[in-house]
Length: 111
Image (cartoon, rainbow, N blue to C red; front, side, top):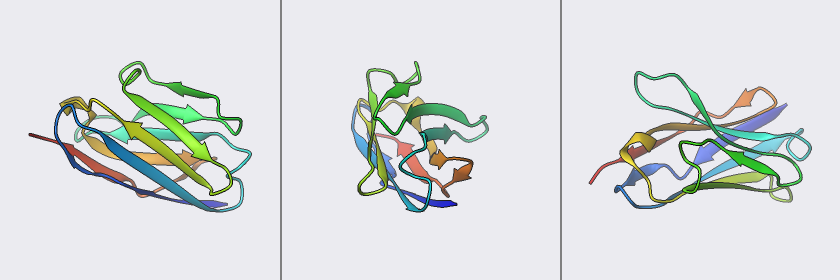
C-alpha cells in the first residue's frame, strides 16, 4: 500500500504560480497512475490531472494551459505546477494513487 503526503499549498495572488508536490512511500508508486484532485468549500471533489508511469498526462479542461503535472519515479514524487492561478482554483488539493489519498494541501487565492 502507498502512503501519500501533499505539500506546497499556501496563499497565492491571482495570476501567480504555485508548485504542489506529492511524496509517496511504500509500494505501488512507479507502475501506477497518479491523480490530482481538488475540492473547493461547498463543492464536490473534482479531478484535475493524471499522469501515468510513462509520463503521459492529461489535464482537466478547467485548468488546461495553466497547470502541468509531472512525476519522478526515482524519487516517488509528483508535482502539480499551477500557473496563472485564478480564484476558482482555491481549495484543497489531493494526490491519489491506487485508491490511497493524501491528507491534502490547501490553496488560497487572494490579492
